[in-house]
Length: 492
Image (cartoon, rainbow, N blue to C red; front, side):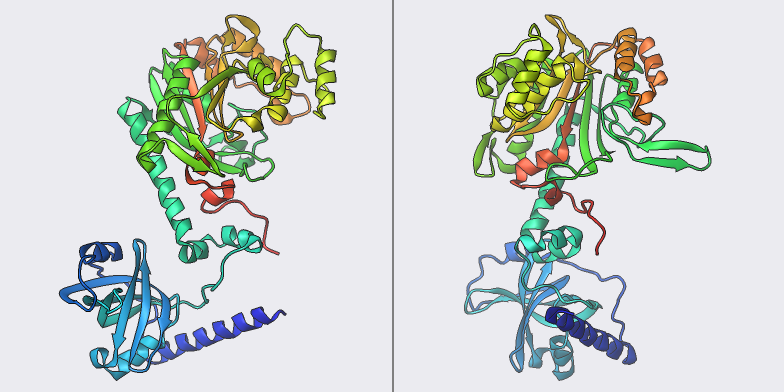
């Protein structure tokens, strides 16, 4: 056993002994409700103008966690933290009495307390509370880490997010920003007449995207169900039903790899608008993200990994073929023979698997050679029909669809279509996608096709990866940083 593990165990034993002493003295180490009257940020704001050495007659009542404790004979100092901030506590024997003073300085960093007292400023200008009453609310049995940084600790930070939030104020602030971003998204869409809806997470047929699903079994129905990989087909059913503008902030699940950009469980925003197309979705995307950035920072300029991202109106726009020519210097077309495309791919170490058609090869070339170069917000539009089975065919080129992706900082943030609403063509596309080697991909969602047969109006659809958007807006470098509890390998 390593020395630090022995030390940790001894500290834990000390705290357990204190716990037993409390219980033996008929003092509860785990209290019930506490009537807090003030938040620390409110106290700081109210008393920011008092002068060093000045006392006030304002009695406050706060609660929080002890984050530091400095013992000095008959007078000691502590630091208390709540959700809103930190404040210094001043503890004196002549104020608390010998017994209560000794009780307090025997508390541990990490303990939760409630207290009351008068506010004042020390001669050094530190706003403080002179404690006159306090009670222990919850005893901490583990020591908070003194140092919590470095690559070595990243996995522990993500696994023990509850400790990460306590000792890293920036992490707490990040998740408060996450909440603000999601509220801002909702407000933006609600103000534009979109209806927030909920669709099934358990689906009999996984659809709406190409991904491997998680499988579960429903005992009462005796059927296998799938955690959704996307809500798309259910949201389109609602458009068929006459709900002209809908959105869902949803959890999706994909039983695939993990990386700095992928978590098996993630948050998506999907939006559908009747009588619209992908150009309308492009405008909506630009307005939505600009509005969220403006509300968060009062600016549309956002720093990300050393780059100043400009989310104002000057977003670039290229077709996929134009982007490949501009950024990779390769002129491609669907008139080229597939063997020519394979040679170009091989020349750039791009793997072409059996069954890849022209469209898939072109998309792979774009992804490998171009996507990473797109730092500023860029719309890439007119995707090959081969990789877009749910989008409307482009009127000027039967090999393409009316689809775009938004790329920022080399990553896909949004994906949108003019939706395919022809039920006969949709069936044909589904049949072309059937995969004999994948049992889950052998089934066609007949109920969705039946819904389309009742008639669906022209519709634009948009999906935004909420976690990736939050990464951009908070300058976070991995998706695990913006998810409270990312999936992790089991602890060894």
